[in-house]
Length: 218
Image: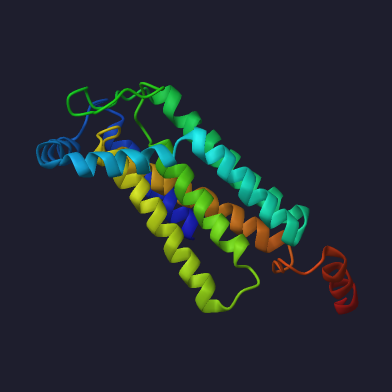
């Protein structure tokens, strides 16, 4: 139901922005307000945060997280993390390339991006999916309050990443909202598959012990 709700949210945003191919009133209002209120310190901060969501940073971060959860929990957590990251990027590209919605014009936008297309925000889709899955995998064997705290931190990182893309006007507001909806829908699907096919994760417990427990319980 959560995945369906997020997918519906994405579809509604898509229906709003796709016919016109240009920013809606909300996009223009937010972009012009932010552009007129930006400060040098804010630009430096949010440009750095935006860069942290770029592929140059996310690829090594993903490798580090995969190595950690693999060391603690074996192969399965790595597979779920990889499926989350690759799937989020693939979904983003599957929408971004055909839609070809232009980014905000330079002047509003502070710097050029590798891709000229704006909808949806890949940073937002990838950050909400990756950091949610990372929080769940890394704290799988921890107390409930630790798991909740990790999810709050993941949401904060994703939120800052998305806002940074609006602040530097690399994306319209609807791009970021659609990216969050797309990434949230995908990670929810992956978590449902993980719950269906995996025993509850026991990171830190050797795989042999987990298998022995599973065998004994049957």
